[in-house]
Amino acid sequence: MKIKRIYIASLMGVLAGVICCLLLNSGEPLPLKVLANIFAGRVLIGFVIGISGLKMIWELHGILMGLIVSIPTAFGAMMGANALFGKWELFVLILIMGAVYGFMIELVTSILFKAKVQ
Image 1 (cartoon, helix red, strand yellow):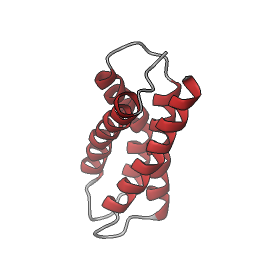
Image 2 (cartoon, one colour):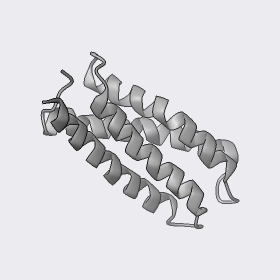
Image 3 (spheres, helix red, strand yellow):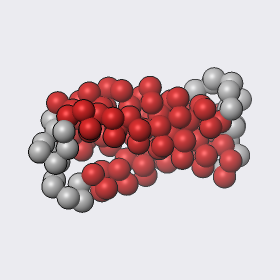
Image 4 (cartoon, helix red, strand yellow):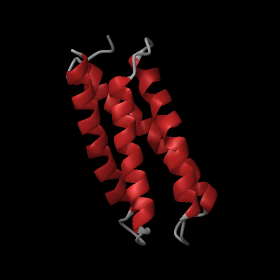
């Protein structure tokens, strides 16, 4: 059922956003606008994975959606970067982690909960 997939993927996106913000904020605190941008980006990854109807292998689907959706988040975070990360390092980190979180969201949604793309 499509609605089940949207709910599961979106909930996993919220969880990924919380985890990502906690991990990034464990050292020198990042500005709130950067954390909010990153959290919203992870939630959006989950939602986009849930609503996407692209027929491809689930691994590639999660990675691709994670990368695409993380591009605006990475640019936004890069503009508010502090001394902890360089601007380009934060940009690349967010893109890579977007792909990782997209993969994990798709893994849980498609394999664990068996809510495949219809």
